[in-house]
Length: 181
Image (cartoon, rainbow, N blue to C red; front, side, top):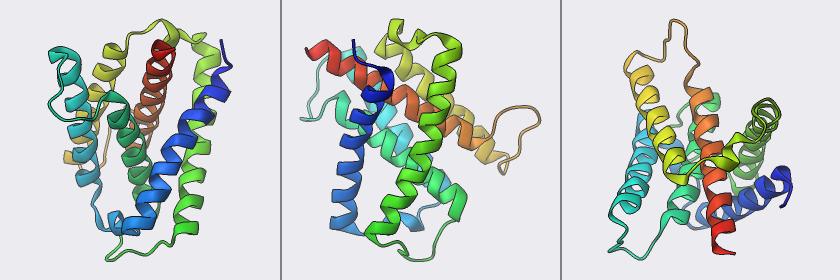
């Protein structure tokens, strides 16, 4: 079994390649999206994954893998928006966008490594469907926090929920890749 850190890097390399290709095609048009719009994009992807898991039949030729990658990339965009604020027009070139992506992924990976240490890699015994449900739960939390103007009384903030959604998606992608072998 491969080291979790290496598996994480392999998944992120694939996600970053897609992010980079889409940045080449579209530029940073996503920079105008408000956080709630990005949250809704992640929600749509998570709901589709759940629907595929329940129905077991897909009428569109894209499976769970592409949707989990989409969740990761949209969550990273949301974290960038949280840090930089929403732009009035696209304002990042490809190099800057990749630097921002890598900066966010470092935070996420460090968190994953710390939690993985404390939880003893419990994710390895989780089902992909449970990871999907946890992502949807985190999304519902984020929507509630957004509706509360970003304020919480005792709970983690929006960024912590996005960090967890990225890590749950990475774990799901690792499970899917190991299942295919």
